[in-house]
Amino acid sequence: MKIIQAVRGFKDILPEETPLWRELEERARRILTSYGFSEIRLPILERTELFARGLGEATDIVEKEMYTFVDRGGQSLTLRPEATAGMVRAFIEHGFQARPKPLKLFTLGPMFRHERPQKGRLRQFYQVDAEVFGESAPEMDAELVGMTLEILKAGGARNLRLEVNSLGCPDCRAPYREELRAFLRRHQEVLCEDCRQRMERNPLRALDCKRRSCREIYQEAPTLSDYLCGPCTRHYQGFLRGLSVLGITYSENPHLVRGLDYYTRTIFEIKAPELGAQDTVAAGGRYDGLVAALGGPDTPAVGLAIGMERWLLCAGPLKVSSPGPDLFLAPLGEEARFMALELSQGLRARGLRVEADYSGRSLKALLRQADRLQAARALILGEREIAEREALVRDLRTGKQIKLPFRDVPDLLNRLLIEILF
Ligand code: ATP
Ligand code: MG
Image (cartoon, rainbow, N blue to C red; front, side, top):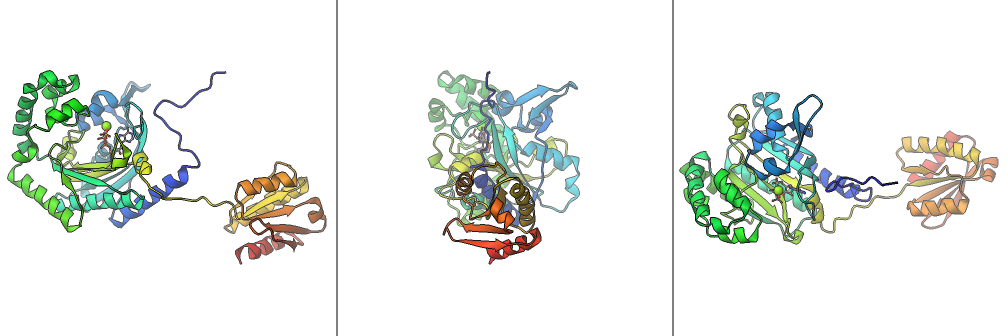
C-alpha cells in the first residue's frame, strides 16, 4: 500500500526534539514575562484580507507565499504567514486601546508560508512573536532589541550580529521611493524579473532581493538615511543611543529593508552567521501606522519575531536531558500485573515518575526494557514475591537490592516512597 507522508515543508517535531523545544520556549516565556509581556493565543486562520491589507499587496508573502483557500462557506481564508497582523486585529477587536499603555503581548506558534523548503526554511515554522502597543519612544525599540538578544543567548546562541536601519515615516519615504525607482530604472536591464516588477509596484522591496547580481547593484543605491526627516532622524539617533547604553554592538545597514510594507522607522535583524544562507534568526521593527491602517485608533507599535527552528539550529551545546523513570515496575504474571497497575497509580500521585510493563515478558526482557528507559530502580513483582508478600527493589545503577515486605498495597507504597525518596 502507498504510504502517506507529511506534506513537503511540514515537519514532525520528534519526541527526542521536544525537550529542547520546550526548554527554549520556557526560557523565552520567562524572559518575556520579566519584561512585562503577557501571552495571547491567536487563531492560525484569519480572513485573507487581513494579510492583504496588513502586510501590503505587493509583498512577497502576499503575492506568492500564502496558503489561501475558500472554505465551505465561500470565505477566503489564509493560514497566518506571520503573527503581527493577527495581533493587531485582536488589539482592535477587543478594544485594547482602553488598557493601560504600553500594552505588551507575545504569542508563540506555527506560521505558514509556501516557500522552497531548505535548511532553516520550512512551510510550517514556529515563531516567538512579541509586540508593544502604545509607545513611540525609541528607548522601547532599544529595550526590545536587548530583550531579543537576551532570549536568543538564553538558548545558547552565540556570535549574533545585529543590523539596524530606519525606514523613516511615509513623509520621508515618499521622495526616497521616487529616487530609488529612478535608480532601478537606470539599471533595469541587469535586474532580475522580480526586481523589475518591484521597481514599478514597490521599489523598496527590491532591496530585499536575495539574488547576488541584484544585491551587488544595490550597494550603490541611494539610501533612505539621506532622506530621513527631522523627527525620524532624532528617533533613529535615540534608538542607537539606547543600544549603546545597553552595551549592544550593532552595525548600521543602510540597505536593510523588511519584507512587509507596514514598517516605519526602526527595523532590525539578528543574524547567526553559522546558519549559512538562511542566517536571520530574529527580526522586527516599528510599525506606527498599521493599527490605524487596519481601522483601529492611531497607535504606535513595535515588535519582533524569533524563528524557532533557526534558533534551535544555533542553540549551541545546550543539553536538555530527559531523565528516565524513578521506578520501573516489572510484574511477572497476571496477579502481579494488576498489582503493578494499582501501585504505579499511587506512586505517581505522590510525585514519582513511574512506568509499569504489562507485556508479560520474561524477567530478563523486563530488565532490559528498564535499562533502555534508563530507570533508576526496578520493582520486581514475581509469583513468589506475591505469595511471600514481599517485593524486590533493585537499584539499577549499583545492582544493590532489598526486599520490601508488604501486608497490603498502601503499606508497600509507603515503604517504596521512603526507599526512593530518602
Ligand atoms: P527571510 O529573509 O529569511 O525569508 P523573512 O524576512 O521572511 O526571513 P520574517 O517574516 O521577518 O522573515 O520572520 C521572522 C523570522 O522567522 C525569520 O528571521 C526567521 O527566523 C523565521 N522564518 C521566516 N520564514 C521562515 C521559514 N520559511 N522557515 C523557517 N523560519 C522562517
Ligand atoms: Mg521570507
